[in-house]
Amino acid sequence: MKVLVADKFEQSGIDGLHTAGCDVVYQPDLKDEALADAIRTTAAQVLVVRSTAVTAPMLEAGSLSLVVRAGAGYNTIDVATASKRGIYVSNCPGKNAVAVAELAFALMLALDRRVPDNVADLRSGVWNKKEYSKARGLFGRTLGLLGYGSIGQEMARRAHAFGMPIVVWSRRFVTGHERIADAAVPLQLADSPEDAAARADVLSVHLALAPETRGMVNAAVLGRLKPGSYFVNTARAEVVDHVALEKVVRERNIRAALDVFAAEPAGATGQFHDALVSLANVYGTHHIGASTDQAQEAIAAETVRIVASYKNTGKVPNVVNLSKKTPATHMLVVRHRDRPGVLAHVFEHLRGGDINVQETENVIFEGAQAAVARINLDRPPPDPLLNTIQNGNSDILDLHLVTI
Image (cartoon, rainbow, N blue to C red; front, side):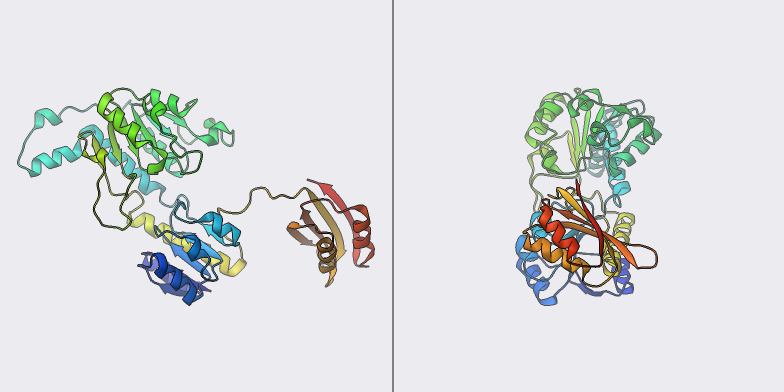
């Protein structure tokens, strides 16, 4: 299996792909048309990227069947086009959670103790113990979390160790997929993002970017922050209304720390201008949340696991673009002898009836003499067609239709 790695990638990951029997092409500086050309000329089946954008022309350029995002977010990949072409998209969720939580906590502490300002004054020859002795401390202060995925959970563990009460808003609790009583540390549940902001002394954002979260941290949420409280975003710039954030920083003495920005340079280096970071109450880092050696090694190992699983079993761990619910309305259950041509006979007649197969599972009984096929269909076959299928092959023992 040929794997094109089109971003910087740990040597341990390259070695792991070789050990898995992959033919690895490592070209970490590929972008845009050059990447599309490489996908075409290498005939790679698997593409591994980190921050590089994967566009429709790239996905259409060659014979890719899997794109692995060596990280958690996959908003840089044209997932819609990948899905249309039957290309798996997979990611490495949770592998950078500790790294991002560590940076978020570092930013919280920096806001409270004004660490960057301390350093800047010392470097310029200014001693100002009187000014910098003013700090509130984090013990007993309430941490508000928007989002409670892998990173949010790591934040909660650290906040609990610091003696901070934690209030959280997350869709997983709203939908009932998880119970707050089952959390690893004590949590209080907020009714809404606005409620979490109002109750927090520090509000930290850990929302994945999705259509429903884009711009979620808006003026209504930010306006509920207490004057003088802290705001941290190490998630995605797009989930926060930066105009509203600038307003509360200016008008409500909010201190903010950001690792993500609305207009970041496309490359690893470049010119950068953002009105927010010119404000005295705002600290920033260079979108480095996941950038620790530990996190990158863990992501490399997970990438190797994904590719090896696909190569050896055809199954893709962490796939993000499979349909959660197909258009299937009925299941045709066919009990049959395990002989060649049985399922071909069934599928041929379904095709003749213009009935589309959505999913198929064929389960073999012990001894490999008989099997049951479960075939999900987009509409029910009429009775005459069912009779034709059953009576047209002597190896079909029974069939029946189930509404799903």
